[in-house]
Length: 269
Image (cartoon, rainbow, N blue to C red; front, top):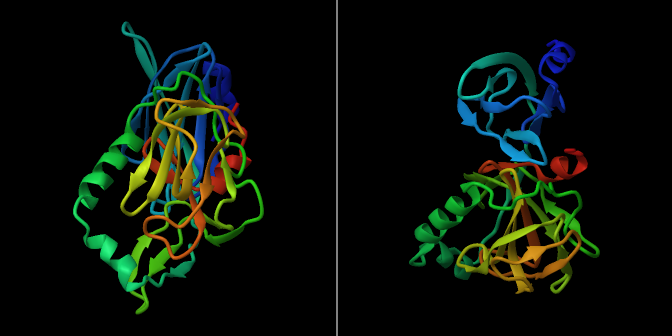
């Protein structure tokens, strides 16, 4: 792929051309308007911030692998033109993660209102960003000692090894009450209690990037509040569907759950 030639023609920045499932491709145009980007059978639209166009293309644990096409449509209402190039999505393997639910915990799955809560939460996560800046998460949100108890993409299986679902984030085991901080600036979209997620926070960081925090003990923010990087937003707990005190931390890009640990290692500037 001749990305250098592409960059010369349209003054565009593309952060990488080889990724693994769960990674994000970052596209930025400083001069010409990006109208849309087509990737893995989905169309993405740019965010215009600080005189530049930004598009984040997510991949997940079940994304297609090998050579994948990206089509960028440029221009305005009078004319348009397209550029096509390719990225390589490498296959990575996700571990099995056995979960043991108590009888009380299993009963949560049958509680009235779960489907509505799930639908509303996903709708919020998939909604367009209202935060007018772009502030991608950059740090791990646990302020204190922790251990990773379940990685991104792990296939959750029950006591009989029956597959349940892929893990959409990372679980950080820590003592109850351990402070949780915002990994970057953003606006709080949700801060309340849900049946399965327990005490839950959703933060919009702009450009379709949102972070989620489940099973909290305490909530220290409220909906509509703008939070700064490293501001304490809650504490570790075991509320909702939880087998012990931990933080479930997830990052969603344009509604897709991506690998949080890989994402915060990048610098999307």
